[in-house]
Image (tube, rainbow, N blue to C red; front, side):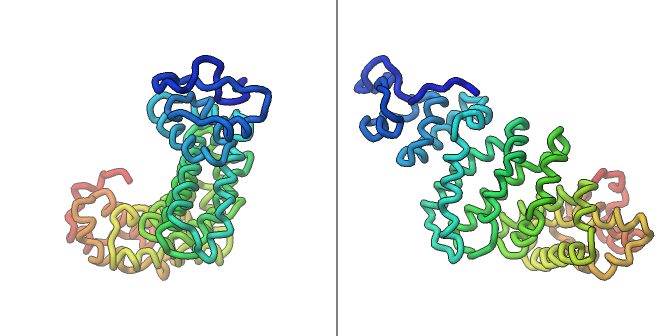
Length: 338
């Protein structure tokens, strides 16, 4: 652990000069006492180490987070390990997350409160994006503290903003191909990640639905993820039924990217079931809108996704959808890799 100073106040010049990054030297009094007795200058002058220490003060935590995010973008490339290895920094960020639990259901969350939590979550995303601190987050089971933020309890803007940000953090953890990928996948499957994604796909706004579908798609593309989702008829049908409802909604209000994710989810199921012959189970489950002209316009210039639908049709019925091929004229593009 890096040897950080006891407080963000240094021992050089007076803070009265606006061009000086230095602050008063601290005495042996506690950090919180110093903060309440001194007037902080522009926090932009503080180093990342000093800003991390400032997270301990609730009055300045939000401003410190703002500055850390700015420095992460411009100067501090090691912010993730700095946060993780600094005493109580992660705990202080969790306090902001936990502090709004009682306002989630029924929804009493203001936009200001939602924004404050989202800023704390943005620093958790910094940790999730770093391979080493990502491993630490999972081993400490930190994402479990984010799950209550996803449970549908209203559709007002502050809640949706909070859900979308939370899904973004969890989505950053789904790098299943890196060395820690199996650890993350196991954690997701052992906790309630899949049911929460399904709930978001069913009840949240368009952006949150899209990110939740992406996370589910990535889980289904892993062998262990598919094994989990096919473990028992109830689990399998609950996932497929949510996918069907998403397709129904997309048929009324198309979203090209989410449609791609949904199609890949069905393909993952079909590839597993195809090992036992044509997918009789999926024949009754896959919505007909995927194979008729419902999405013809949105997929007109997307030969890759159109061919993916042919792959899905072949896996289910044992043949290509000839009418769709003629309609979209994709035979010349059938070598596209999905």
